[in-house]
Length: 71
Image (cartoon, rainbow, N blue to C red):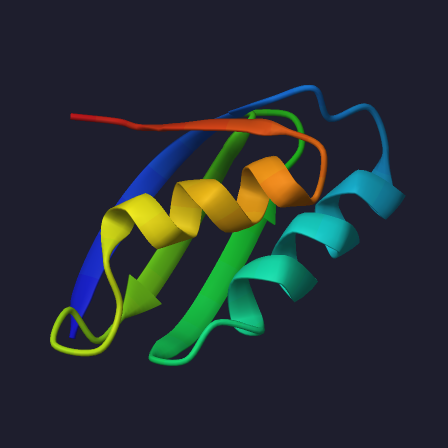
């Protein structure tokens, strides 16, 4: 398992948070996804042998938001 933090842009409410968490948790290999509206970040724990970082950002984009890895 690996943990990563994504910078999320475009969120404005709790509904946005739920939508992004649902999108991330819907991916195979994602064990945990916690979105913080105020900090505009998502902390994700996933199995890197099953899932790729690009797929996480793609899922957020499909939900209607932008995501970039925080280094």
